[in-house]
Length: 471
Image (cartoon, rainbow, N blue to C red; front, side, top):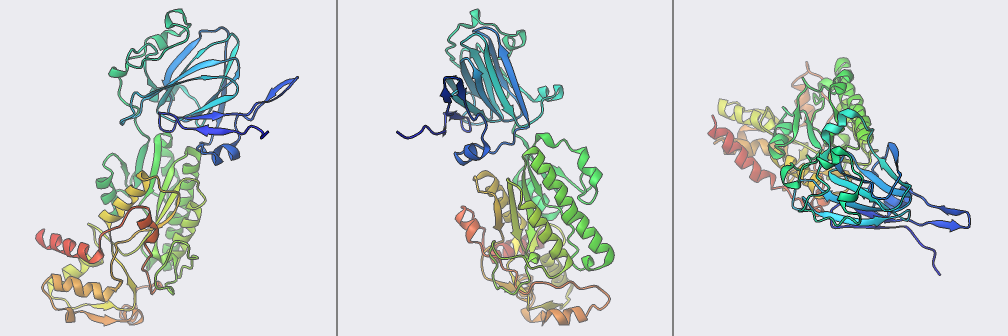
């Protein structure tokens, strides 16, 4: 006969999981693994990072507590006696108000996700109720609780001991009915660098997000991190970075690049780990040396210059987190100053610029980058690294400049093609960072995850038309 094994079961409430535990007993009593991270997470329990264990002794049968939806996840179980447990989903959405009930003894535990209200009624005297939570309780955090009345008729909970005969607190008796409460608010999404090209697009794509500019949070300033209440944050999208590629080759620029792109990212990682936050970090083609014509997510990092080295270091830090998405992109075009907007200005002013023709890649338009990030966050995509650019033909900078000039009514021949080395010699007074020859990123992984960005040249046509129409 096979030995009993631990199992994890779903319920009618998404994320509310029932654990069938194994009681190892003999004439001395029994022993159980009430929290066993490796086994339970392998079976599908979230690795929810508990930090506080609390125990409630209930002297008599009929003690009834709840419904409380605290701002954390918890694993509830019984150490002695039996209870009747009831749960109500108070999160916004189609499952709002869904009820689940179950009788629990020492052989059963229930994982209760944030936003699901928990209650129980003791069925035996001297019942000991245990709950393991992933945040520290404090009086201030009670303000974020959600409550619903134990006697709410619409919930239809069939309490084994009628509530008129039960022992309840005055506070629990006074809780509002379901019809009178607002759904529990989801944890916030924070966009760092909200006033940048990508940050602006992210705030449009995710209008409920909290935008943080450099005046609110500066990656290079350690003290600025302490001004934020991270306990209410569920996702951080880091769209900020030191991006002055050439200046990073100077002494001052090198220090600034490392301060923001490595030290600042390390602080974000510590915060994300502490508060169970998903960290979305924007990476760059500059983490590669460009010797491969098209880079996949698993290629070894090989940065050429200081900027690329700092981005590679940041990627390595974020990659250690349990909940993360490193979104690698290239040649980003948005509402601010960028290569395409510069070419439009030059075309309209009658200038015939020299543009490098030996660097190859694909443009990335920020609205598509933002949409791809939103897709990763809401599609259940696993943690990891994701290449994300627009699709289509790989082009050189000179090719793209020619396209822009044609769209502006100029001739492609007005663009002079030069090599990277020749271009650098034309500006001897400026430091020039080494750049990857090939910046195109393979998009198979993001496509397999259900997101395929539009063609880059189609986006370029629309972008140039919009810019010209707004003049």
